[in-house]
Image 1 (cartoon, one colour):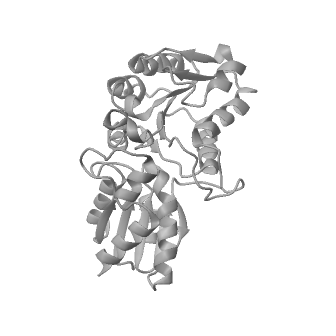
Image 2 (cartoon, rainbow, N blue to C red; image 1 turned 180 degrees about the horizontal axis):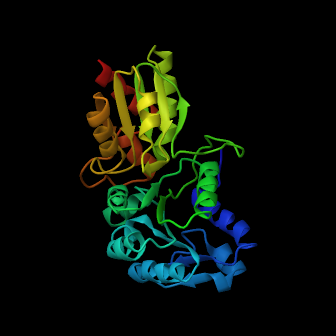
Length: 308
């Protein structure tokens, strides 16, 4: 089982790139430890910026550095980065089109028992609503590395959300990613469109359903905005049900985007495998997933019920 977190992969990828590229800057809001960025700060102090607990300053300073030709990765807990500094993300990054990658660590309910103040269940909706802001939710370490390497090659704003714990390996080091989505499994009865931490449970749910005679496909929509509509529509040809899975509120995220896509382009029944619109129960991420039926077994049960 993989024990390397996606946030650690982001640091390792930036460390490797910074050997040749002195324009790479990592900025943190008292989050270098929780963001696994300590090694970068130690190796490249001249390319590191610590602003303290001041998320608005973090984003504005990052945008200013980007305006001077730097490639800036602003790292902070997703719950604060997507709310406290939303105006700065809107104006200084998206509107100004600065080369800033906002890295939301410990996304979704990663902080578990710390409660709703530390949960980020609206960040996909918020960031996706900003014109020009791309939104990524990688599902494993290999995909995370590929996304960061790709973002280092362009100059457009982006938001990446990663979990706190290590993710199951779904890909290999030589996997090529393009187009923002990847078909992991083809199916004839149901199609899962998932992102981030829920890709693996959907893949395992598809395996369970297959044993019961239900053919389920899985698309990893790791770039939620812009969504790869063509790939998703093609993967859904002939299926009776589309299930969109995300560690997010049922409003404004991948489920909403998927429902909008099929309502306008190819009417099908679309259900959301999301967290509820309300205060989440106290517990670890895995305990909450279990409680809300977002495990492989819970997802398979929900799909069978919807198909029936």
